[in-house]
Length: 156
Image (cartoon, rainbow, N blue to C red; front, side):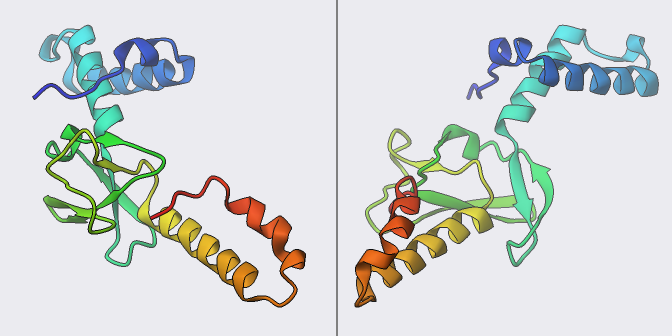
């Protein structure tokens, strides 16, 4: 399986290239140039790692505790409106559908989020709270402006 690298896009990003140069300098200092792969190969590997790594949260999903490269997840694309989440438990990441209509075997229609689960769940909770306020209030007009805040929150 070939995983995404976005090499051309990263080469155009001066901040990303500066970060890679710092990493490469550290590798060179520690291992010595004679013990490293060609710089372009290291860059290609760096791009694949950077683009495809996943946040690993604590068991309560309150904070990120690390990054992992779960190759099975790399077969799926990312989305700002995901229909799955992944749950990490040590060396295992499990992809979970957000509703019963998601077929996780269909990679063309299955997406997960770039952002951490707690952020996504937080957005959904805000959406639900505002929806509750708007739909249950006797004075709905006073909440109309709040309702517009949810325009870009994905429906799950």
